[in-house]
Length: 544
Image 1: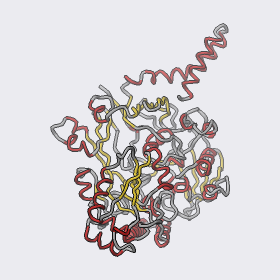
Image 2: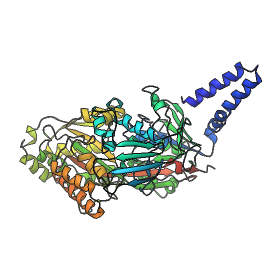
Image 3: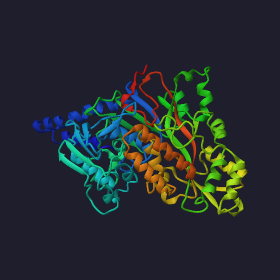
Image 4: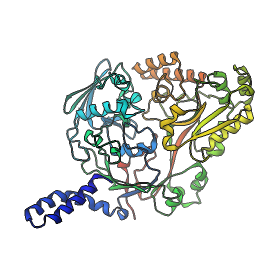
């Protein structure tokens, strides 16, 4: 449980033990009164009109340096904060930093920090906390799989990540409220990366408590962790000392695996629910009263099946292309998703800057697929080594679209693909080391820039380049695009890069995602965003 509950209990015990001395009683009451005051709203959360009830599976971690998937981000983004953030229009705006300057050559950033930022414990945040947090994230002993992607452009960060140094030389604490950050070369998207949790501030004192410190997180975000009942309930309480606009909600209750989400929504137990394709016809039927509560928005995401290009048979580009053309993605979207998502025409989602509407990558063509397989070094399906796909799930339960792809490969190529599952909690953190020839994965934009897809997923050596794809010509083009200041020219470079990736076919893009939810009429401000995580601080509840 959170520290605040332990402190409240110990303070009450002290009052009873020292009741013979009026002065001590007064002192104890003065010490405990703020804590008791902060408890009162939480003790009545179940009936409070300013409480949002949600269904969830719970986080894998609450450590910003480790968090690398949506289930954890949903909490981390509310408990912690960074120098900058993305607003509702996906534009960079101040957060802990209230302003910043960039050098003429684009390689040096100087951030001016707010002077009223405090951790949930009450300790004032300074620029030194960012230097500590980033060096901790890059420290190999922390085990971050995201530090290289989001902090690796900073001078000296790679040296720390690779164990050659303990200090990031490109991060300078000028004074308590001024932070200088120097990067290796100009990158148009660098400041966007600082909106990712890896760049958030953590409290060194909290981390020093041990490896499980994150279960009692001490962040600077608009909410703080109040209660965590494992496998049952997580309560986030509004942070009354937040430096920005206070959250409209008093608290958010996450009911963990507490039943069928849609049934709970219909019973009024939760206020918002995601809608899967299986229920799409039901909730959009005008005869159904809930259809007025339906909200939908495109998501900047890509679902795909990747190839391990470092090992047979997917080290052969013709095999990869054959597997791509053999899958009927249009049928998957039409039948399994009931047209609630969009067939992926490439790797950059619709709505992302640089999306090329002229692309139509990997159209379904079984005859071409067989021809390509025949052109490969293997010649036919009979000569392929055994093929296995790695998926997330339990007990042979995995996405239906994966099963559809397996059938297409069997029917159109004569290839039997076996399935190996990793537990969902471990999947994203172990996939790179344990992948098979194929793997099923999704990627949601962290910031609205084509680099977040093409550079992060396909550049040589990137942590999220799971299949080991490498193309030096692509790397050089991506580097030039990163430094290009003319936005139109830059986006044209990324479109060229996308076509290069399509030619090499390191993965099969299946579909671009979307967010579909039901929201109770008394809930305002809950918007399914393009990055997949709603801003809970903007949500309000006027429960009848």
